[in-house]
Length: 470
Image (cartoon, rainbow, N blue to C red; front, side):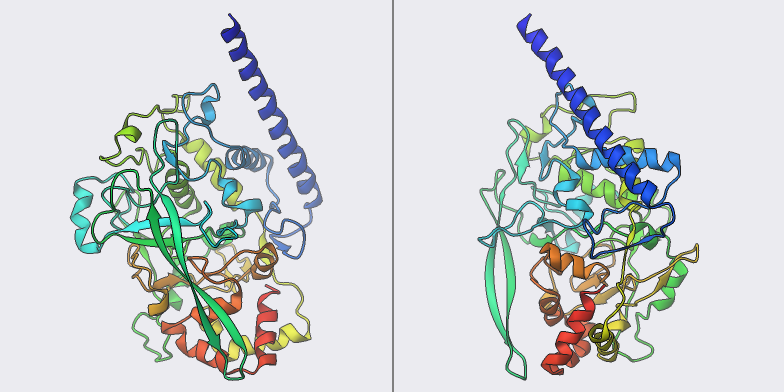
């Protein structure tokens, strides 16, 4: 009797808690929406929570936005649980909420004070592409075949497990400090990471598996990027470098969900996702262990017996997936319906830096202005294309057509807010500052980097000051 009464109290407490949280979310967002009646799609990133300002929406869109925010922000729990809408966490996972790695829709701390990885720094596992036949044996990771996963641990290391399910491994870094001196004598200390794993739960990684690092991006302005036409992006591509300017950006073509056609990648470090929904589904599966319409199977590898027999989330009226389509769409709506960063009015120093930015060649890839199919002009400073970034940034992980050395041009909007928030830079978070990120550029960006290095101290400061206004 006492146990039954305790269960009722638990369910009642959770229901009241969720009601209060969601009501608070709705109230705060409604205030924001009321204030935003006459605003546009952009926000000044110098303010509080710069990536968390919602767009103006219809009532129906707002309802979906609030639902998505709840599933984005409130922790998921392991099965079985009375909280059946959120009991699909794991069996393997690294975070129990999306907001853990996207604080206020930005990024999150990636390193501890001892320069060791925190949960937001993901460890990706990749086999050489000549091992692609392994997909035919165990094809559970993704319907897209973006890269070949490790046959023992899969495509990404999970640092936590539910109940009796063991965490896959402890993620670790060897850190190397590399001095760099400008021609004028200024010294900069660069950081390089070599990832490795400790306490592996299921034996060693397969031979030839490579570990690559990924830090989370900011989640602002994504709807605008999704709305840039494929034709515009392709018009900027020059894979054969016909104009002989040393820049040969190219698109990353992905397999569509139905495998019948190719679609253009435009999100993530190597442009390996074409829509906000596909990126959301991928993160839900690999970071939280949530099955969904795009990743319907638990990512338990054959050697992981404890994972294979672990309890699963309860069925709901929406089906047997942890994250059914309606909730996946709601999270994507929440992610997509935030304002984009807007460049502040440039002071004299920033104007000088903008001029230098163009003169050294940064704008060849970091295009300042894009336009959506709805004729909305915005300024992300990217061309959404892949570029060879040189040997120093090679990470051993091809993704679809992107080679080990190729990355999508990282958007520069919000750089100033990221600096103020203490975010790190580049795909593996090795760069503490935008300046360090520039010094790691190579390949197609080698010429621009060389010109930057040859600038005098005042010119470098002006360019960096400009970046922090974006």
